[in-house]
Image 1 (cartoon, rainbow, N blue to C red):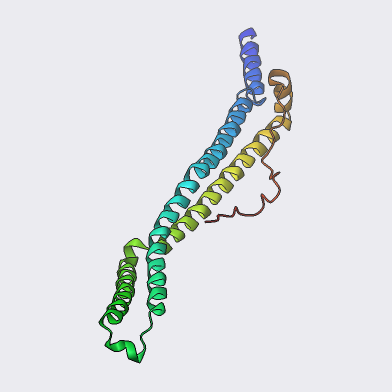
Image 2: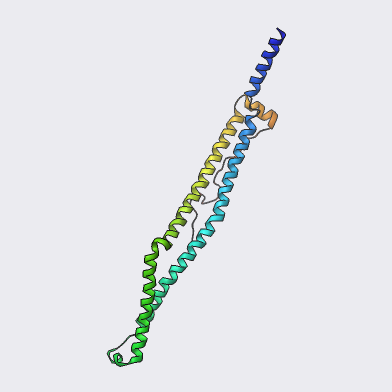
Amino acid sequence: MLNIRRIALVTVLAAGTAGCGVNTIPAKEEAAKAKWADVQNQYQRRADLIPNLVSSVKGAAANERGTLTAVTEARAKATQIQLTGDQLRDPEAMKRFAEAQGEVSRAILQVRQLQEAYPDLKTNENFLQLQSQLEGTENRISVARRDYNASVQDYNTTIRQFPTAITAKLFYGAKPLTPFEATTPGADQAPKVSF
């Protein structure tokens, strides 16, 4: 009979201890900390990725901008060289005019080559990729913050519910974790990227 009482007492204590959150509380706290590490990881990813993407787009845009600038400059030079009816007989004037027009033709050829290469070389594609990466990065950060807040809510709820509230205070001195909240002015708006 004494053994049955002991077994019953151990069973009741084990069941009571299992329900008090001795193991649950630290597990949930660590889960919330891991979720915060995910948030920090996404911020670091953004800090590392965005400047590299912007530099890449700037470089590709500079290449195309150089081509377009060459066309504009060649066109401007060509329009400065005017031939009057009297100059049509002057070989030097004709040569200058032909050279200026040749520069425009070469520059336009570069633009045509650029247009033909657009499926492979597009600056537009680089801008679209940058835009996509910015959006994806912000979405990843948002998801990580949401997951962190859900984990914090789970932990905070656990340490406030009976009987785990007793265990949380007595064994761990547990205090609620702070959820992520935007505190930076303008944090509710997407960052602006300028070139």
